[in-house]
Length: 109
Image (spheres, rainbow, N blue to C red):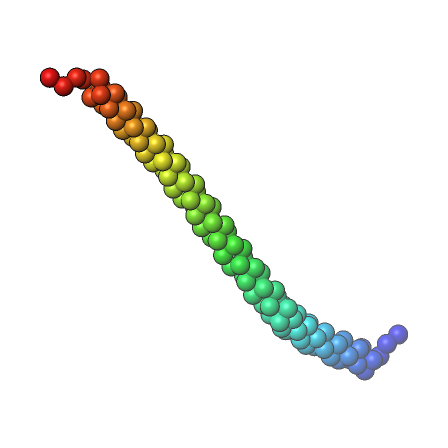
């Protein structure tokens, strides 16, 4: 059997161990918090930078797409104008040829 002194010594040692475990628990939580801050924050910053860069890439791709669409539209308009000019020129040429043919077939009085 244990004596009162032995029981008191064990209780004292157990209380000291509990305090030490509690102190280590607090220290471990602080260290984990520090590690999270030190490791996660740079990762979060890197992730934010990557997201920003992806946004810039998407914006650039959208601008390039719109620019190409605008170029294509302008090219189509240029082609349409050229076709109309060709039609007008051909019509004028036909008119001139017909006019000359008719005027040459008219005999002076």
